[in-house]
Length: 243
Image (tube, rainbow, N blue to C red):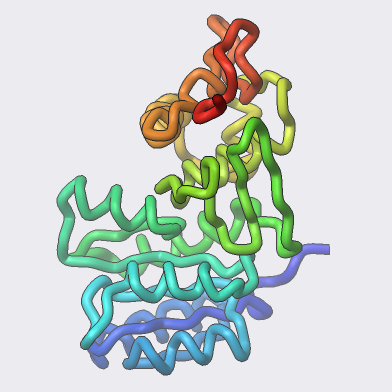
Protein backbone atom coordinates (compact mmCIF):
# COMPACT_ATOMS: atom_id res chain seq x y z
CA UNK A 1 0.00 0.00 0.00
CA UNK A 2 1.36 3.40 -0.94
CA UNK A 3 1.27 6.36 1.41
CA UNK A 4 -0.94 9.28 0.45
CA UNK A 5 0.61 12.73 0.08
CA UNK A 6 -0.99 13.77 3.39
CA UNK A 7 1.17 11.15 5.09
CA UNK A 8 4.33 12.53 3.50
CA UNK A 9 6.37 14.64 5.90
CA UNK A 10 8.46 17.46 4.42
CA UNK A 11 11.01 19.55 6.32
CA UNK A 12 12.07 22.93 4.93
CA UNK A 13 15.45 24.25 6.14
CA UNK A 14 15.84 27.89 5.11
CA UNK A 15 16.43 31.20 6.89
CA UNK A 16 14.35 33.17 4.34
CA UNK A 17 11.06 33.29 6.24
CA UNK A 18 9.08 34.65 3.29
CA UNK A 19 10.30 31.86 1.01
CA UNK A 20 9.60 29.29 3.70
CA UNK A 21 6.04 30.48 4.14
CA UNK A 22 5.37 30.46 0.40
CA UNK A 23 6.74 26.91 0.09
CA UNK A 24 4.81 25.78 3.14
CA UNK A 25 1.53 27.06 1.74
CA UNK A 26 2.08 25.56 -1.71
CA UNK A 27 3.14 22.14 -0.39
CA UNK A 28 0.37 22.09 2.19
CA UNK A 29 -2.14 22.89 -0.56
CA UNK A 30 -0.74 19.91 -2.48
CA UNK A 31 -1.54 17.70 0.51
CA UNK A 32 1.83 17.39 2.25
CA UNK A 33 2.50 17.81 5.95
CA UNK A 34 5.15 20.52 6.24
CA UNK A 35 7.36 21.83 9.03
CA UNK A 36 10.16 24.39 8.82
CA UNK A 37 13.42 25.08 10.68
CA UNK A 38 15.73 28.04 10.12
CA UNK A 39 18.88 26.54 11.70
CA UNK A 40 20.93 23.65 10.29
CA UNK A 41 22.04 22.30 13.67
CA UNK A 42 18.45 22.14 14.87
CA UNK A 43 17.45 20.61 11.53
CA UNK A 44 20.02 17.82 11.90
CA UNK A 45 18.68 16.94 15.34
CA UNK A 46 15.08 17.06 14.09
CA UNK A 47 15.88 14.75 11.18
CA UNK A 48 17.51 12.21 13.47
CA UNK A 49 14.70 12.33 16.04
CA UNK A 50 11.74 12.35 13.65
CA UNK A 51 12.92 11.62 10.09
CA UNK A 52 10.80 13.27 7.40
CA UNK A 53 10.31 11.73 3.98
CA UNK A 54 12.03 14.68 2.30
CA UNK A 55 14.15 17.68 3.30
CA UNK A 56 14.24 20.87 1.21
CA UNK A 57 17.36 22.77 2.23
CA UNK A 58 18.84 26.07 1.10
CA UNK A 59 22.46 25.81 -0.06
CA UNK A 60 23.80 28.54 2.24
CA UNK A 61 22.83 28.55 5.89
CA UNK A 62 24.65 30.36 8.75
CA UNK A 63 27.71 28.27 9.57
CA UNK A 64 26.63 25.41 7.28
CA UNK A 65 25.98 24.50 3.69
CA UNK A 66 23.38 22.06 2.44
CA UNK A 67 26.27 19.69 1.70
CA UNK A 68 27.34 19.74 5.36
CA UNK A 69 23.83 18.82 6.46
CA UNK A 70 23.40 16.03 3.91
CA UNK A 71 26.81 14.51 4.54
CA UNK A 72 26.32 14.70 8.30
CA UNK A 73 22.96 12.96 8.16
CA UNK A 74 24.28 10.22 5.86
CA UNK A 75 27.35 9.66 8.05
CA UNK A 76 25.19 9.52 11.17
CA UNK A 77 23.39 6.47 9.79
CA UNK A 78 20.06 8.25 9.56
CA UNK A 79 17.35 6.34 7.70
CA UNK A 80 18.44 6.10 4.09
CA UNK A 81 14.87 6.73 2.95
CA UNK A 82 15.23 10.45 3.79
CA UNK A 83 15.44 12.41 0.53
CA UNK A 84 17.07 15.81 0.00
CA UNK A 85 16.39 18.63 -2.46
CA UNK A 86 18.81 21.57 -2.50
CA UNK A 87 17.59 25.10 -3.29
CA UNK A 88 20.32 27.46 -4.45
CA UNK A 89 21.04 30.69 -6.25
CA UNK A 90 24.22 28.98 -7.49
CA UNK A 91 23.12 27.51 -10.81
CA UNK A 92 26.54 26.57 -12.22
CA UNK A 93 27.18 22.98 -13.28
CA UNK A 94 29.92 22.61 -10.66
CA UNK A 95 27.47 23.38 -7.85
CA UNK A 96 24.78 21.09 -9.23
CA UNK A 97 27.24 18.21 -9.59
CA UNK A 98 28.63 18.81 -6.09
CA UNK A 99 25.14 18.73 -4.60
CA UNK A 100 24.19 15.51 -6.36
CA UNK A 101 27.53 13.89 -5.56
CA UNK A 102 27.08 14.63 -1.87
CA UNK A 103 23.81 12.73 -1.78
CA UNK A 104 21.11 15.21 -2.79
CA UNK A 105 18.28 13.71 -4.79
CA UNK A 106 17.60 16.90 -6.74
CA UNK A 107 18.89 20.45 -7.12
CA UNK A 108 16.64 23.42 -7.91
CA UNK A 109 18.18 26.72 -8.96
CA UNK A 110 16.69 30.03 -7.90
CA UNK A 111 14.52 31.71 -8.96
CA UNK A 112 11.98 28.92 -9.27
CA UNK A 113 8.24 28.61 -9.49
CA UNK A 114 6.37 27.10 -6.57
CA UNK A 115 4.60 24.71 -8.93
CA UNK A 116 7.98 23.48 -10.16
CA UNK A 117 9.09 22.74 -6.61
CA UNK A 118 5.92 20.74 -5.93
CA UNK A 119 6.42 18.77 -9.16
CA UNK A 120 10.05 18.03 -8.29
CA UNK A 121 9.09 16.99 -4.77
CA UNK A 122 6.55 14.55 -6.17
CA UNK A 123 9.10 13.17 -8.64
CA UNK A 124 11.72 12.58 -5.94
CA UNK A 125 9.20 10.90 -3.64
CA UNK A 126 8.06 8.60 -6.45
CA UNK A 127 11.59 7.32 -7.05
CA UNK A 128 12.75 4.23 -5.22
CA UNK A 129 14.15 4.83 -1.72
CA UNK A 130 17.44 3.45 -0.52
CA UNK A 131 17.13 0.23 1.43
CA UNK A 132 16.76 1.14 5.12
CA UNK A 133 18.70 -1.83 6.46
CA UNK A 134 22.46 -1.84 6.78
CA UNK A 135 24.04 -3.76 3.91
CA UNK A 136 27.64 -4.24 2.90
CA UNK A 137 28.43 -5.32 -0.65
CA UNK A 138 31.98 -6.12 -1.70
CA UNK A 139 33.88 -7.19 -4.80
CA UNK A 140 37.66 -7.48 -4.98
CA UNK A 141 38.24 -5.13 -1.99
CA UNK A 142 35.74 -2.58 -3.30
CA UNK A 143 33.20 -2.19 -0.50
CA UNK A 144 29.86 -0.38 -0.52
CA UNK A 145 28.26 0.20 2.88
CA UNK A 146 24.65 1.34 2.53
CA UNK A 147 24.37 2.12 6.25
CA UNK A 148 26.78 5.04 5.76
CA UNK A 149 26.51 5.43 1.95
CA UNK A 150 30.30 5.11 1.79
CA UNK A 151 32.33 3.38 -0.90
CA UNK A 152 35.87 2.29 -0.10
CA UNK A 153 38.65 0.58 -2.01
CA UNK A 154 41.13 -1.26 0.22
CA UNK A 155 39.97 0.95 3.10
CA UNK A 156 40.34 4.24 1.23
CA UNK A 157 37.20 6.30 0.56
CA UNK A 158 36.02 6.87 -3.01
CA UNK A 159 33.84 9.91 -3.70
CA UNK A 160 30.66 8.27 -5.02
CA UNK A 161 27.52 10.17 -4.10
CA UNK A 162 23.90 10.72 -5.07
CA UNK A 163 22.66 9.03 -8.21
CA UNK A 164 26.05 7.49 -8.96
CA UNK A 165 26.00 5.84 -5.54
CA UNK A 166 22.52 4.38 -6.17
CA UNK A 167 23.62 3.09 -9.56
CA UNK A 168 26.66 1.39 -8.07
CA UNK A 169 24.61 -0.05 -5.21
CA UNK A 170 22.07 -1.56 -7.62
CA UNK A 171 24.67 -2.96 -10.02
CA UNK A 172 26.88 -4.40 -7.28
CA UNK A 173 23.79 -6.00 -5.72
CA UNK A 174 23.27 -7.75 -9.06
CA UNK A 175 26.88 -8.67 -9.80
CA UNK A 176 27.37 -9.89 -13.36
CA UNK A 177 23.82 -9.13 -14.54
CA UNK A 178 23.33 -6.79 -17.48
CA UNK A 179 20.59 -4.15 -17.44
CA UNK A 180 19.41 -1.94 -20.26
CA UNK A 181 18.89 1.79 -19.81
CA UNK A 182 15.12 1.52 -19.34
CA UNK A 183 15.57 -1.04 -16.57
CA UNK A 184 18.12 1.17 -14.83
CA UNK A 185 15.82 4.20 -15.07
CA UNK A 186 13.08 2.23 -13.31
CA UNK A 187 15.33 0.75 -10.64
CA UNK A 188 17.33 3.89 -9.82
CA UNK A 189 15.20 6.89 -10.83
CA UNK A 190 11.74 5.33 -10.32
CA UNK A 191 8.86 4.16 -12.47
CA UNK A 192 7.49 7.66 -13.09
CA UNK A 193 10.78 9.43 -13.68
CA UNK A 194 10.79 11.96 -16.51
CA UNK A 195 14.52 11.70 -17.19
CA UNK A 196 15.58 10.16 -20.49
CA UNK A 197 17.98 7.32 -21.25
CA UNK A 198 20.84 9.71 -22.02
CA UNK A 199 20.86 10.53 -18.30
CA UNK A 200 21.91 6.95 -17.59
CA UNK A 201 24.94 7.31 -19.86
CA UNK A 202 25.98 10.61 -18.25
CA UNK A 203 25.77 9.19 -14.74
CA UNK A 204 27.61 6.04 -15.80
CA UNK A 205 30.46 8.19 -17.15
CA UNK A 206 30.69 10.00 -13.82
CA UNK A 207 30.61 6.73 -11.89
CA UNK A 208 33.32 5.20 -14.08
CA UNK A 209 35.50 8.29 -13.56
CA UNK A 210 35.10 7.98 -9.78
CA UNK A 211 35.97 4.27 -9.87
CA UNK A 212 39.00 4.93 -12.08
CA UNK A 213 40.67 6.82 -9.24
CA UNK A 214 40.97 3.50 -7.39
CA UNK A 215 41.60 1.33 -10.46
CA UNK A 216 38.11 -0.21 -10.70
CA UNK A 217 36.85 1.38 -13.92
CA UNK A 218 37.06 -1.96 -15.79
CA UNK A 219 34.48 -3.45 -13.42
CA UNK A 220 31.79 -1.09 -14.70
CA UNK A 221 31.22 -2.56 -18.13
CA UNK A 222 29.29 -1.34 -21.15
CA UNK A 223 27.55 -4.14 -23.04
CA UNK A 224 27.39 -2.78 -26.56
CA UNK A 225 23.88 -2.54 -27.94
CA UNK A 226 22.25 -3.41 -24.62
CA UNK A 227 23.32 -1.65 -21.43
CA UNK A 228 25.57 -1.94 -18.42
CA UNK A 229 26.75 -4.36 -15.75
CA UNK A 230 29.15 -4.52 -12.83
CA UNK A 231 31.37 -7.58 -13.06
CA UNK A 232 34.91 -8.80 -12.48
CA UNK A 233 36.79 -8.29 -15.78
CA UNK A 234 37.16 -11.51 -17.76
CA UNK A 235 40.87 -10.85 -18.30
CA UNK A 236 42.41 -8.95 -15.46
CA UNK A 237 45.49 -8.39 -13.45
CA UNK A 238 45.35 -9.17 -9.73
CA UNK A 239 42.87 -7.02 -7.81
CA UNK A 240 44.02 -3.39 -7.61
CA UNK A 241 46.63 -3.05 -4.89
CA UNK A 242 47.25 -6.79 -4.60
CA UNK A 243 50.82 -8.00 -4.42
